[in-house]
Length: 219
Image (tube, rainbow, N blue to C red; front, side, top):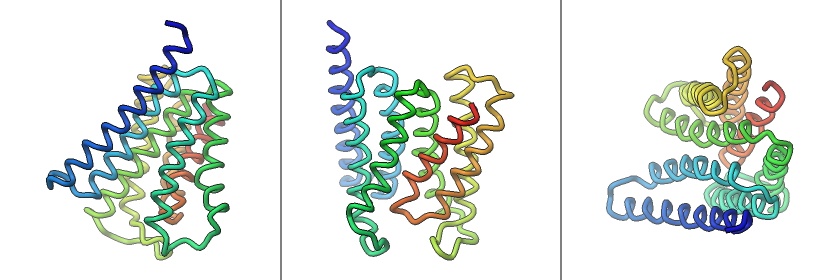
């Protein structure tokens, strides 16, 4: 099979895998095995994991960028409905902030060969956000008055990002720990701060871009 053929197989498998993950989680919610909240956060983490074969398996921008755009547009559409009462932005400005800017940042990282940083940023965002949401519900404690997000959730988010960047960067991509430690620390602090300080419709894309830029500059 040609290289293009294999890349088309990767995209087809990615689409099928994402659909299967979505349907399995939806079925678990219907049967009462998972709450809607748990299913949503599990799918969020799965999105991050499913990005890995796209990043490392595709060499053609006309395949990679539409796949990323589909993910970002799906997340943007869901948040448009979920946070309708909280945000006050025209639709065009909203999609520019939560879909177009992240797509440009991710496309730049992929095209410039910063694929490890891209993967680490995506995984950090997807797992860190889920960890923050769960910790915020379970631990309680002080909350930021303008977002109602807990400081405990922000701390757990930072720990999750730190762990993912250190483990993935060193074991998965071979970055040396002396170079990785400061980058992971700054990415964890900045990413968690952005996620906690911004409203729910903007926190994920802003955190993703923040962590990606920190890693791209420092690694």
